[in-house]
Amino acid sequence: MDNISINRVPLQPSIRQSLTSNQATSPKQSFLQHLHDATVKTELKVSKHANQRLAERNIQISDAEWQLVSEKVSEARSKGVNDSLVLMDQAALIVSAKNATVITAMDRKEAKNQLFTNIDGTIVLN
Image (tube, rainbow, N blue to C red; front, top):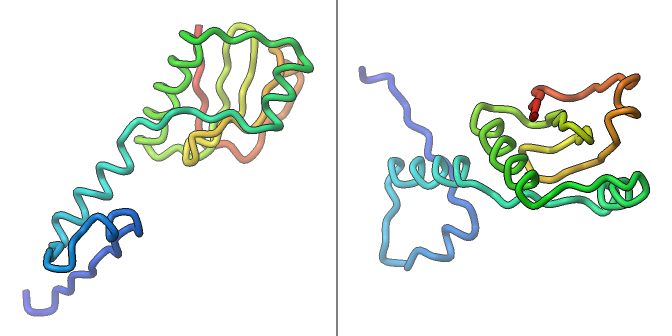
């Protein structure tokens, strides 16, 4: 047991700023903070490119549908997915789960004959 080494995970700048100079952070606290940051639900953002595609293709997604997409992307991120294909009745979205950002969008007819690369997860919504 004498050969065990423990590496400290560096604190994020925002966390470091919230600590006073008199507080010491144990590795356990640092790990718990990172775990919390990784599992906290993040609001889904839509990139400028994806917004343009949604408008050009007249794709309408309700607030309830966006909420469901956001929840499923958050769930996928917690399972290690970085980039996902989200298939909906009316649209197909490429979403960076890691960044909680919709990268692009297309209608389902357009998506039918596409080859999707560089994704590591698929979310199918009905």
